[in-house]
Length: 115
Length: 114
Image (tube, rainbow over all chains, first blue to last red):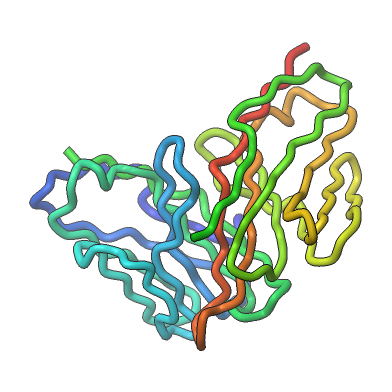
């Protein structure tokens, strides 16, 4: 069983749809992250949650709305996306977001296509 | 801004040694990570350096020079399964009460040929 799971693995949506991405970590970590990975671009950090509180929001458009109901679950709610939002969305978790040595463990990602 | 550079692509022969370089210019430094990512899969943790020097872990080693803003990942006895992208990532201290940020390079796609 992998430590971080994500569903769905693939998602195709229209620009007017509303969908949600789900992430679950089974590692007992306290911090969870959303990243966007576009072709030929570096991984971009979108949101960070520590103990269910958002501690980082890197100027992400409001059409992306995160939710962290508990330390094991993280959602990314999507609404009126644009075609340029098509990318691989990766979830990660770590023991502590402020600890200098804490490694982030990634889920397999959701491949999102916006038509 | 944060700048992390690594070569886009490399090719090496099975059984050989390959070195993947990473240079960085960041506002602060709190450690450097290397991840391996096979196509369509999650990045997986390979190594972490925070002090200067070489960290060895089996066939993989990672080196850091903080004064030069430079790291490399060394892969020995290459195997076909080592064909993947290798991501260099630098952790910077939190700006205030926020989290450490992790900034990634674009990744180096390594192809191992027979």
